[in-house]
Amino acid sequence: MTCKNKTLLSAFFILLLTLSAFPAFAQDTPADRFKDRIDGAWVKKEKDGSSTIINYNKSSNDIIMFSDAQGVQEVYLCSQFSPTMRENTWYLLGTNDMVPFIRMNITVRLESEDVCYFTVREEGIKNEEVIWTGRYSHMTDYGEKKTPKEEKQFVLDGRYENDTMTLHFSKHNFQLTDDKGTHSGLAALYDFEDISILELRYLGKEGKLENLFQYKFEHSITETDDAILVDITLTPGKIKIHGFKMSGEPRLTLTQKIAKEKAE
Image (cartoon, rainbow, N blue to C red; front, side):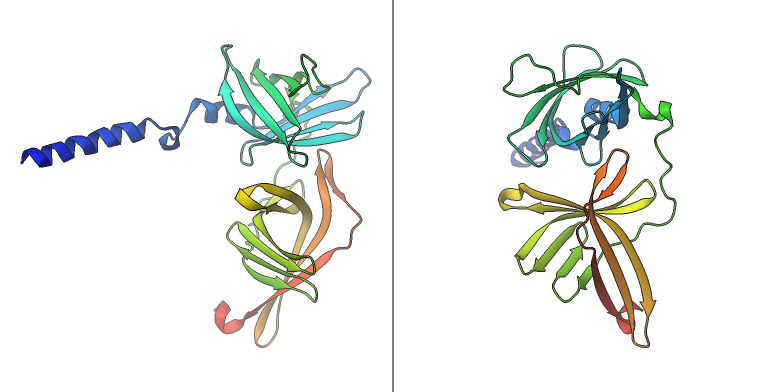
């Protein structure tokens, strides 16, 4: 082996060692393990009998905070997930899903498998804890979590349209065109309690979230002599901790026509 080849080989091994040190290559980090442990809903019973609920969703990396007494629900997108000096305690920054300049500094201390203490302070307001701060128990202790549906999930793909709108899905992306123009972003279809939810996240320049819309999702499939018709019905609303609440806006029905030759 020549001196030049030895030099190249050495450089290659150094590169491998360098890359292996980056978190992107880690399969199971301490942060991932902690997120697994706090994934799900946590409830704090208030003195007046109401409930305050914090739900951390690892897959979407967001937190939903809900107060029965005040009728308030807030959604925060999580970032800067990092450990603190205290054991089983992590810090994260929550950015309000609808109002990005509202941020919460959130400290999560897992006291046991079923008890978690959340300390929540609004960024920019010194030493003032908000209503979400307190000791929470895992919601499964109250039997409020429901078993997810077992049937196979419908797969969104292709072009759906009606007289005023076209909605095209490709993997996890969507493009919507109507009289207001064309919008694009990320789409997710998932089960919530006993219904399916379609979530559309409108993304603007540089991938920044502009709007989030949630719909109760229903579909039906019929056949004609030459085509398969897939109808999807979207009922606008919003996920609340205790269920999906319809907004009262008109339902949307769109259809995809698939030629039988193509379907086969």
